[in-house]
Length: 101
Image 1 (cartoon, helix red, strand yellow):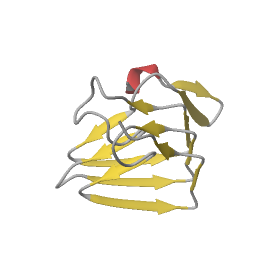
Image 2 (cartoon, helix red, strand yellow):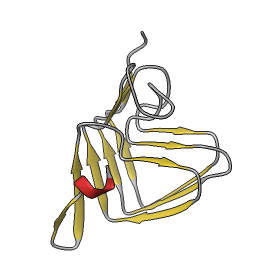
Image 3 (cartoon, rainbow, N blue to C red):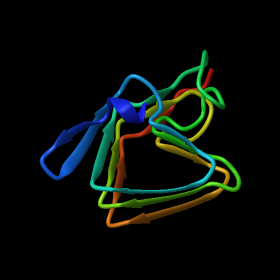
């Protein structure tokens, strides 16, 4: 999904359609707005968890000046399902949700 990110000035905006990333290594993100991401019942790895990101052990995700807004998962982690390490600095998570199956 990272190839679907559109650059607008110095900010990066991702507007839905699926999960942005399945993190198994070390990933640092700065200045991202992610909205409308979805980890649905039918796909993704792992399915239905982490509407914007899934951080698998031993993955590490660092978010700086990032907004995770209105993302959806069907089992866990409306914005981020985390089984590794997550750092959020000067960031916002709002309106993310889980709608059980």
